[in-house]
Length: 123
Length: 123
Image: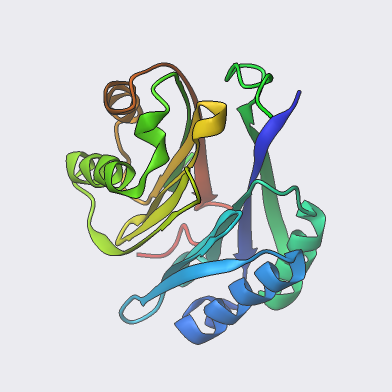
């Protein structure tokens, strides 16, 4: 079924909670993923929680990437939504490497049913 | 199962494509939803596509809300991720009203399995 975008979430569990704790490294992780996927950045925002934990996003021409970390729970939530299909497993492998995780759960959702929107006649 | 956050998506189909076309109204929709849910804004970013279409994001203390619109396909994709549970149906009803939609698909994902993260002993 034709769709307008792919929305994927990665639930990342890691014992290396230092990696999840501060903005500079988490920001670097997001930029690496966006660069590897060949997506285009529009604007970004990151917030450091006290004493640890990060929330952040990069708005993309193609939609967005976000991350929210709970180092106290050894957990980070990442998602990418893009109107351009992307390699979900590639991102999983990058996150496993960059966040030293061997447990990552993936959920994929195809969004925007073009036939349902009645836009199949659109140019 | 205890979880750290609820991630919900709303796929909104509407014939009132004017509502989906420009930043000011879409920004207002997102702010209304965030205010109604009692969530706290950190930073926001919106982009106007030429000639129509909007992508936008509000980073929240509790995580995020985003919207990406395809007026040419009569479609908008919204998501909220929050560490605080929220009323999914309330948001659906607001979007139906604000975007004049009678077709909204909802997907809910509970994210961050606390028992899996080994953090069940955390305070």
